[in-house]
Image (tube, rainbow, N blue to C red; front, side):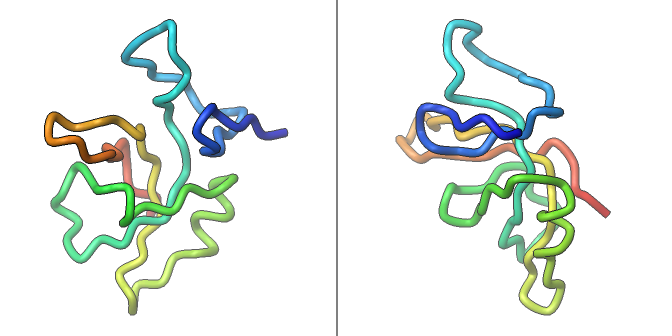
Length: 93
């Protein structure tokens, strides 16, 4: 079973909620595919992140030739510049 947040992002049922604001469910931990030319970055703009339903879907969607890497991310969160960002929790290797 999946739960969809207010913005339509998929939250997997076994993911830990890491809410910055406990009264909001807009930011959460989720599985994703990241267009990541460098694995040294720790935050990614929303247009580089595709949220997926499960760890298996993230792993299946990986494409090293195109730098599409599976990960667990936290977000989306609004930056001080107004961008929506996802923060890396961990890479799925």
